[in-house]
Image (cartoon, rainbow, N blue to C red; front, side, top):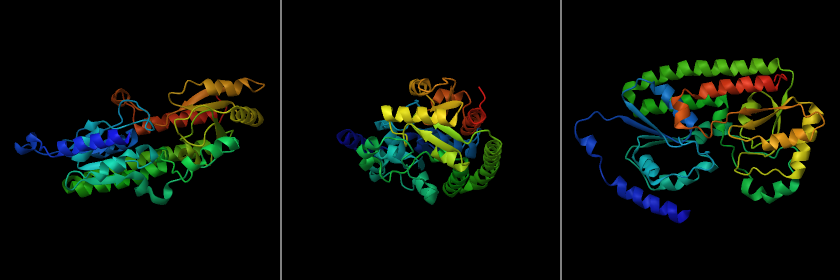
Length: 326
């Protein structure tokens, strides 16, 4: 991996030495914004507007690959080097970015690390009840003090981060600074309304607990509204094999709390969920999916998927899960 990255970065440097011919022909230069994950891409898209003529937005992780598995191509690294504004999350899954940034970039390039911008709002992954001690001990060194990078799954954080992005765009492009700020205010109102909808739903819900038979990227979302949770894994690593002890604990918890639904994340085949509820006496639970927005495709975005639409759909899923609806 190191050798591959060094080769890519060497090619990046060479590519960066070649000026773009089109910029010398009197064409109006557009602001180049590069984002890694879909939520950041969609936020920038909202701020600049659909009909903008002055900003080009590049979304690197648009193939549907899970953000935890993504590795940049040489073209991606060149794009990062040549952009005006780079927006990335800054978590463990983007550890490759450190080497990419160390190679320098376009003069005046502005880099936005969203986790750094959020500051104390970033949470650390924590052990969840029922995960077997042997599993936690085996991976304690790898996961100790690891920050939870799924910051976009908090509507409250989305407000803060879009404010940061609007201010950054305005600093780089002063001519359109006010339009970015105005767009952010409009978008913030939508985020805050959806946030209120979540709060109202939880206040009137029959249940206050959900159970994930899957990886767990939803700590921010559930903590925002005081929803209790159990999960097969503490975080969202690529690991998907739950131990016998974990399955038994989840089944016991599911039955003990008489929960009507088990949850997974998008793309999961539901096999672990079925195993868990088949080990309860009722076998009556349904399986529903929440969208963590970490494996979005370009086609989905073109067909109308947005950050807000995904979070609205998640609200509907949680409404059913917390009220025992099928």
